[in-house]
Length: 197
Image: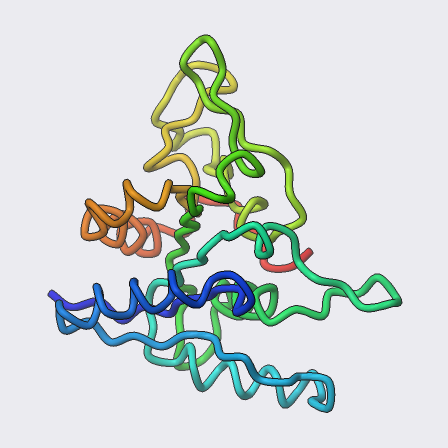
């Protein structure tokens, strides 16, 4: 069954990844929408919100493409978030009339891997704390629903509302990860969702 997806990406270094995903999803008949390189400097917060609500309306899953320039959200001179990706993620996580909270997947590109994760000698993976809303929605399952009973170890697929997936893993098995995002969306009450930084 086709899934409605929204692709969030940083235009400066993520356009080719967005194009690849758009083509990949389009072949399956999925409905897709994505961010654009639109100047927001003259837009009010309300205009930005309405614009993104319109783009997100049909979607049930948001895929965030993490390239080196997309790892941390942009801020203005006052230190406030002034970033399309931040707004796309936070509005994806809103539960509002006509649109439930989206499932969330963060896909990191090979160029961004060293900035996101570190493989430990024990075989586990450490995820760095980055200034990005996707990160606040990882390892956020409520304790009574945690799949991996080991303290401090989380099941990558189920114990985080936002799955963090390497690009090649996602490309080779996108159906699995989209289906997992939809499953988590359908039992969202099991997660402590963070909707804004």
